[in-house]
Length: 164
Image (tube, rainbow, N blue to C red; front, top):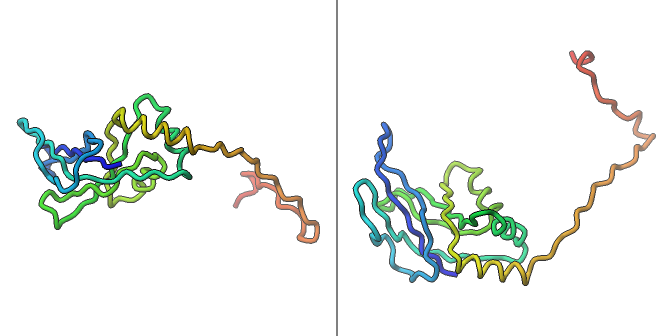
């Protein structure tokens, strides 16, 4: 599904930065090639249609999609990447509806992850996909391996008084 990414450039009072970027919305079915078109302008902020990304979903990630859909306000996670070659200095890189995938991008410091609300059209499409493809995987408790007496006595936990 094609999603247009709406970015907001807001002026801020900060000693090192003049503005901040936030992904504030997505536009389902947006046309490609319509990058950096001004959608709204107010004092101190400008909203742009920054580009169109393809939202890809996979049948192995339905657990994450289901988790997202069960929240009070489902999100579309937008990964923004800093790009010095772009006039804005930032470009939309990825759109995902899986919170686990978004978390992977949050672990690094190279990308900015924003989470605008999921439009109803996308939520309905995703709900249908999850209903068709989700399979509950049973939880298997890990079993402890028995002690092998040939390997010596089992290690016992140390007490604080024994630590050096």
